[in-house]
Image (cartoon, rainbow, N blue to C red):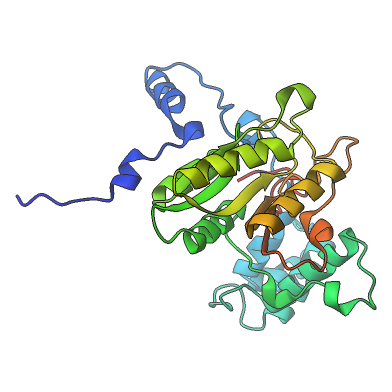
Amino acid sequence: MKSITVNQNIVDLEYAVRGRIPQRAAILKKEGKKIIPCNLGNPQALGQKPLSLYRDVLALLENPRLIDRERKLENKLISNYSLELAEELLVNMESGLGAYTESKGFFFIREAVAKYIDKRDGIDSTKTELQSNPDNIFLTDGASEGAKGILELLISNSNDGIMIPIPQYPLYSATIKRCGGTQVNYYPDEDNDWSLSVEGLEESIQSAMQNGINVKAIVVINPANPTGAILDRNSIDQVVDFAEKYGLAIIADEVYQENLYGGEFISFAKAVGERKITLFSLHSVSKGYYGECG
């Protein structure tokens, strides 16, 4: 049989949360041992009961005939609120849940996201130049798919570098490898609550540039995964200044912005403001809002 050459980047990439330990756990499970999966943010695997509202509404959107059926029942399985919400969504969708949407996702949802961002960042309704534009918002199948799409867009050859924090969520190192780019590490200060320093960022980018790497973007995870650190305003401003100085895009992974436990979140969108800096901001409904990762 003729041998087939495959993409070596795919062969070589590593994704720690699905690496050797989960593989070993799968073997132990086959041997009859009870396994508790703690390698992923997966609360239902640890016994959390799923929230019924979202499943009820999705069921109604998948099969709208259930709406009339439920309204006629005396002992409803689904609340009136879920019925009304499903009807409202169906009206806005126009073509229903099964049809193809715009490539960026339903406009009425992107419009709602834009309004949310403006409210979150306290954007004055009169300052139209700072208001979020629904046309610049993309709905993806999870924030991870959004991150992958951004990196695929930015990395055009093996000389393209992306700065990522260490430690980091392995999505970034794996995707950079898959896209054939170069991972450029920078190191938040563990002894100072994982804060960022200009000196550390400068050291990382200068080292990469001396090796001929074309650094194109910096990834910032805030609040951080896995450290849990929340960047203060000074650290965020330093990153913005650094990106502007070197003409870098900022990839702000902000999916845990609702999980603060008393901390203060400052968005990169608010920090960048009117400055001419390319910013990709990632958020997710599955973390702080639903608490049902995955």
